[in-house]
Length: 485
Ligand SMILES: Cc1cc2nc3c(=O)[nH]c(=O)nc-3n(C[C@H](O)[C@H](O)[C@H](O)COP(=O)(O)OP(=O)(O)OC[C@H]3O[C@@H](n4cnc5c(N)ncnc54)[C@H](O)[C@@H]3O)c2cc1C
Image 1 (cartoon, helix red, strand yellow):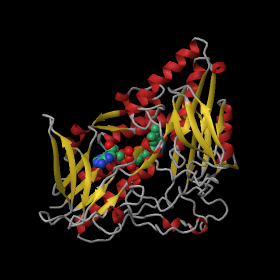
Image 2 (cartoon, protein in one colour):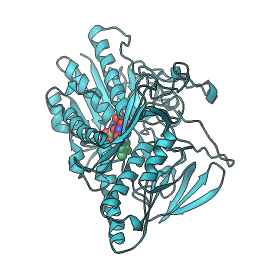
Image 3 (cartoon, protein in one colour):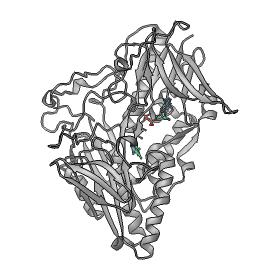
Image 4 (cartoon, helix red, strand yellow):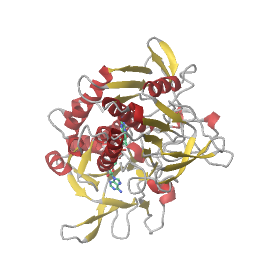
């Protein structure tokens, strides 16, 4: 009997465990270790952040779902990986921590034959002084953060209803933050809500970003087909912001936040500030903060994880100059470099390099987005990692028939504003592949026939439909596996 342990019940880990249980549960053991008792459909947190959904609509309890799936669920935090075992354990194990019902702290060793690290990002608010919901800015990265953001946003709406002007600042809260798409969607939703309340004349809306040009989205921008002609995403993003009455500050690395005031440095080296009444700024992302130890207790974290705490996998991490980066640098099977029964799926794997051109201010501050880590590739990677493990367990072979390079797969991004069947509107962008491949597509970096942008109501319906469809799938309801990642 083989034992597969998955760390992290997010989009990637939950997808992996769903397939593992479907194909292995009769004869093998599948374990999920995750600290939050709920699954959350993160993309819909945007709607929680503008009061159009409640946290209960974007989350559900994991325990009954894992019971139905036959997964051994441990509500716990993984703190260390011992891939070589120790004096008591021949096999690799994960050290996990949890608190019992009678409030006792417990540490446990969970051994494995295969391990999938799908612990997602650590929301690194600490990397920017004053950033985050415990300090001076809001976040929509979790349902609790989003609910808190909505409480704060309503205060600004109230003030505007009483005739007071309000400044809204949304974007990236660290010089190297990613996830611009989520922040972009949030500011459009705020603009939509302000417009709905007929308060536009009292609102000053600002987008602040570490992107060199708008529409970079951490993927070096894209050329997209739109209405039959080709547009750079810079124009696409700028026209959308303009249409919603949003002004922007670009090439900005936010360094510090105080109450109502953001400090930032620009790529020119200028130090500037921006006042705000309401701010939602995405933090930098880091790995989950686990450590790794060898059989003799030696700290081998540097061998297992990259400097940002994300796990090193089958990618090319040699620090080549930007001009030499290639699509082939990106991982195919997400297998750990030194430990062949260990994988990293979703945001937990360390990307080999940025996709946007690295930029630095004269003061030496790096200001550019790190690669985007969206849900679709996270789900697909979780699935193929599970499929390879299932294949190896069932055949006894050690090869990997399933691959999912971000330089070969496409992704769709739906930036929706508004809510309901008739009122919403969305900008839909598909890119294929996610990572530019200038060798294969020398003109546009991507397949221009599949790299498309559209604005309209249909995309908004799709986003709404996806909310219900993916929650249905995550709950492992009948025929869930027919719904693509
Ligand atoms: C507001 C917002 C909107 C977004 N909208 C979109 C969108 O429209 N489309 C899209 O494609 N993508 C979107 N994304 C990105 C998408 O949500 C992520 O790509 C996706 O959630 C990543 O999946 P993951 O499984 O790698 O990480 P996560 O979903 O973050 O899951 C990680 C899991 O690991 C758990 N964990 C953390 N540490 C540990 C530990 N030490 N031990 C065990 N478990 C641990 C966490 O509790 C969590 O359950 C959005 C992101 C945000 C923040």
